[in-house]
Image (cartoon, rainbow, N blue to C red; front, side, top):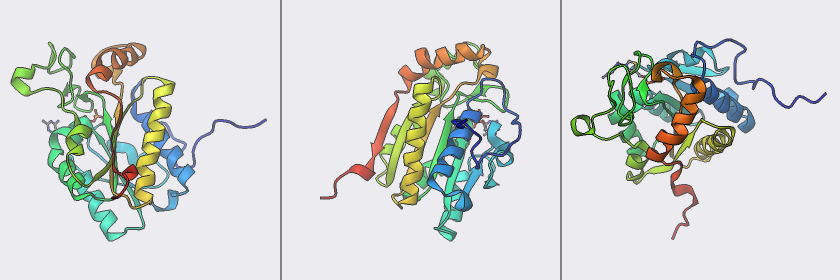
Length: 250
Ligand SMILES: Cc1ncc(C[n+]2csc(CCOP(=O)(O)OP(=O)(O)O)c2C)c(N)n1
């Protein structure tokens, strides 16, 4: 019998702590498949964030460092500059990247660091029990926003790849969703390109992944996928936001 689906070598054979229906496990799997397919496991280093993925180092079968409170792009920068042969990725949630780590991500992108950023946007600070994040939608109930985001008070939901697109030195920026097999396959293609760009020395890449968080959205896992389709994607359009690698040089 031919095995068509098995555990990637880059993923440890352990149970994760993530809730049922959470997107982090899917993202871990995609990264592991890509690292295997690119044959870079021996030189890959991940930087885990604060947030639900704080224990990411327990699940990947390659080196993972940890950086507090939005500082993974800084640690990734140092690691990549000291050892350019390494393939370094920063793994971040929306609280970590778009709130407490906003300055870090903008400046890493603006410097054009040759790193890959995996940005998991589930619309809440999951780890803190569902407080509002910069990405929380108007009308989205969270523990600290029972009536949804009040844009007049706190601003509109933040579009991170669009924000980074204005930095001259960002190379590849995309947004994908984890709500269907088709969208997950597209997410894998975008993530693979982001890693490939680093391997080819093309510079800073970031892929935002719209991810379900049934626990802190207070909905069933299937309803969380429907919410992404009906509410999140219309507010955060999918696709490649910038691809400098395919531009012809004059
Ligand atoms: C305003 C604010 N700043 C900083 C923190 C510290 N903090 C705790 S968990 C966390 C990350 C939030 O998680 P997120 O990045 O949204 O990932 P998730 O847990 O949803 O996977 C941060 C920044 C906080 N709770 N609130």
